[in-house]
Length: 228
Image 1 (cartoon, rainbow, N blue to C red):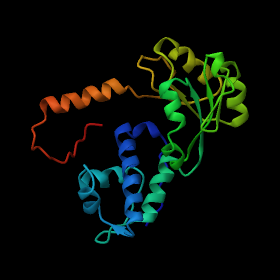
Image 2: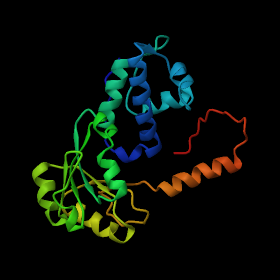
Image 3: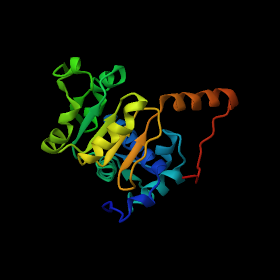
Image 4: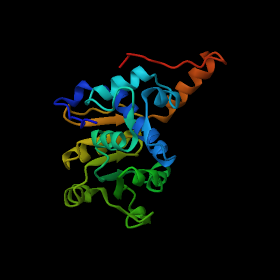
């Protein structure tokens, strides 16, 4: 099996493709747990919502994997996919906003299983400062730049009310954070060299509502969409 290759311009790979890679990694982990050592794209398709063609196309963005007529070595492909995603390296995360959602994220152990570690949290409420939640100390946001640099934190999570989200993003960027996950339901302005991902739970629920409103009851079709 050939080694994966890093592409020169990551912007040429769509977020949809990256999201599918994450799902492939989880699927390969499940196969590994079952003791399956070799798998074909057709078998991967049967366990997912993607066609074999889509799976092969996604992997081809990064190199050639597997052998024709044999398939993919599960452990090797999983390792390659994880290296493409960069999750073979432990990534330190700073959380800003320790309300209901932020507190829940501090207890979300799945993050650690995927090599993401929330090492510090910040909140504007002085009454929360120095509280320890799931081994993470809540701190004064004024200390954020210093802690981000000393801890070499790479990712920021925004879980503050909408009115404070832009100010929080600007603070993270000024501290050197270039990758940010935003849970605040508001539009944020950010420069092109910063990677911002937004998670709006209401939009996700509205998408499910749309499905319930329009999807035929017995329609179970695999999608091989080229819409990136």
